[in-house]
Image 1 (cartoon, rainbow, N blue to C red):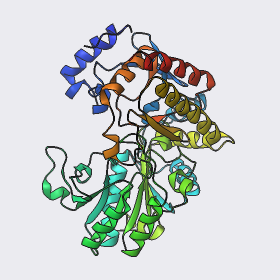
Image 2 (image 1 turned 90 degrees about the vertical axis):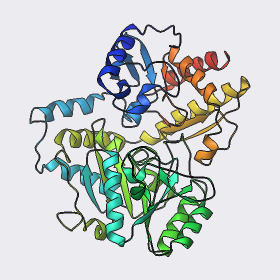
Image 3 (image 1 turned 60 degrees about the vertical axis):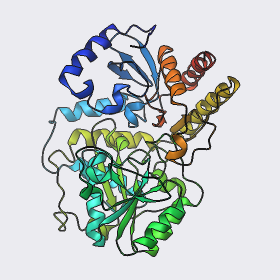
Length: 432
């Protein structure tokens, strides 16, 4: 156990019990602090830009429930609407008008979406859109990028091998090779590798799926021309282009990465923000493609809790808040101030770092960079990141417990939180 000046007695007791009840003591792997050492903090409540743990410690939060808390935790407008919705029941298992309302908002905001289907998670959205890609094109192979995470469905749990572009192998026990045999991989930001794959399989690739801004290998933006090049290649070969905007949707712009970069994919997956903190996902795209989804068409996909009235309510209120003037300007300014400050402090302390941000999404790597791909990100000094993470935790700053995760700001973060965070970073980064 790493020594700590934080009072963590209750967290340790709860986590010790949890390890006997749940695999690794957690409901999702990254929460276990495996990559940074020590035991995870067990939280009790959240509000605005802050978290409080079971021992009473307070933290400025830059995880934001991994993205959805873009308006700040427990926003009073969202909470009030949820309380009113709760009085009507928690689940209908039948249509409700709230689905129409949120669907109209999503379609109005996201350039590629003409029809949308709500599901319960980002994983479910990506799994469903993969099936839809194959159903529409009649092809089986897909291209994904190393370092892009699209949920834990078998066909996406693939790691890239050596070389410019390789056929993927299963990245988890229990995933049969036959399941991933149609999953091709290429390095992110490497358009030439994608061209090679299309040349090798010209009539077999259903589509290309990617995080338009990578958040699951750390924060990695697309190089100039990369997204446009993918759009041209997919059109040339009759394949579909899919943006996984579970993380970037409604975060880096109201219309997501496709609005930010001016590239319209054929299909899009969404999650996190459109649930306002409740479990939700969605996929959508061109009407002719979505018309294949059951019951309109033959491609089957279903979900008992899909379109849940509580999730729809939270999503509607969150998007209403995001439509207010100055929202994304605030996120961009706050994130820019944070990243610029962290980079300056780290370099002044002789740490080799790089990083960046777009709107309310940011990242910092302990490598001089530049970082264009997962291979570049893996050059980071993970021991330094672990010390930085632990030190910031001691100072009351909660960062994602992995070098390979993006960070998030919210509308609740003000200059006061950023200034306090930079003061903490000054202390921590000058200590090693």
